[in-house]
Length: 107
Image (cartoon, rainbow, N blue to C red):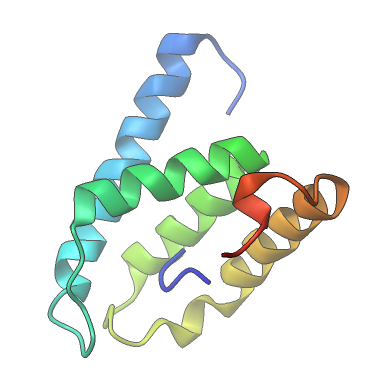
């Protein structure tokens, strides 16, 4: 699961996703100093946002990123349990309706 794990025109959506990805990268870079952290942050964050968009969970993902950005210690993400849960529920609804979707299956 995620460790950290929109209605206007295309340009507006792109600006929103760029801002979310940039915030994610900033938090990911900080998290690389945590135990077990060694991420290629840009790739990780772009892939996470792409997945959230595919699942229809952009708002929940953005709320999660906002929560992580407000943490005093990025290495302790337990205070973001509600946004993590909301994202998980959203993803679960999508995957429940689309169980064969590659993003819903694990290898």
